[in-house]
Length: 168
Image (tube, rainbow, N blue to C red; front, side, top):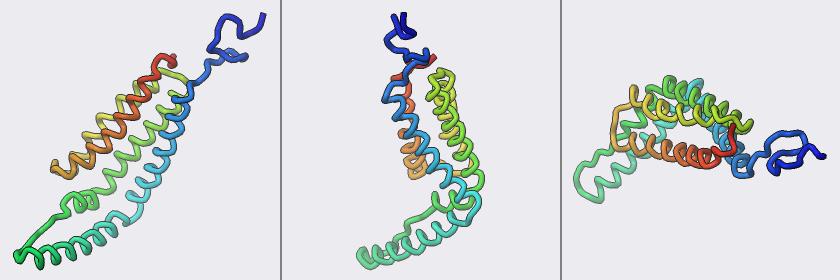
């Protein structure tokens, strides 16, 4: 009698096989987390947010001048969100860094087919969306920016949840 008899979803070693979609999701999540981790480290430990804000401010000044010439009246477009993000880059970076680290760890648990990884993945999403608004005012642009990020993580969470039957 073989070690695999009567159980079509187990390998010879008795380890449950990982579905292809779950493997792709975990790998994609790790790559996304790695990219976000590096980005967050740069925003915490360098002056990149300030340089980006200065560059955006110069570009916005040129746009405002062009609009004033075209419309014949003064126009002011603000960079309020960019200025708030630059001013609070360190706490926002630490929040995002913590979120990305926990997500990567939960993706590892899901890779190991542990159901607790999925619950951790779901639990960490809400604080990651709410905590930045302690430093950033709630405006349409901030809601759209963080809403898009939340939509991305919600989509990944949904795809992970579709594979819950494979988790122990």
